[in-house]
Length: 253
Image: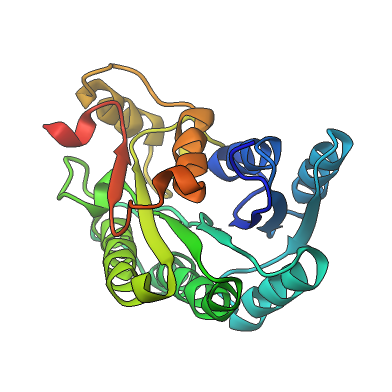
């Protein structure tokens, strides 16, 4: 198994890309902690993984709250040993355009920027103790280019994830800790209908984005999760500081 002996923390792991990644990481041999606000779905996901014969734990976590993230990392280490894989996947969407209010911006920054920072901060000491690890973060095609859809606030937060990743890759390599990110395009997840709050027809904007893709379709969470497994595994031992688009060729335009 590709992740035998690994201990993985996956934030936003109760649905979408996070859930698909939790399932595949467990299938490939990792012990998995699912950290999420959705207790019902999170507990169900962890139970499903345990029932399949793998080790899994659900912990309620608001990644915007520093103490929540620290508690997840510490509890994981106590249950399974030092975490060697962190998937910073929890995220918030919207608002579109230039109509964001302060509360909306604060939520985006708290989840998409602070949440990623807290993950790095608290997992790094354990990875140093373990002799290395892999930190994977969910950026976005919106964070690596201007994009054709007006989502400046969201794009800025995902651009921050890109810079976190590159800075960490340069400064943690000496500890055998790798940092990479994925940049999904339009993926079919429960977040999709909520992506542009306040927009009269958000799915029409999404359809525009899908139409721009050379493959003319949305991606599936599992198609992203396999990239996560690769980055978590020793197969990617010389992959560091890379942002991998998983977008059907959208970012190649």
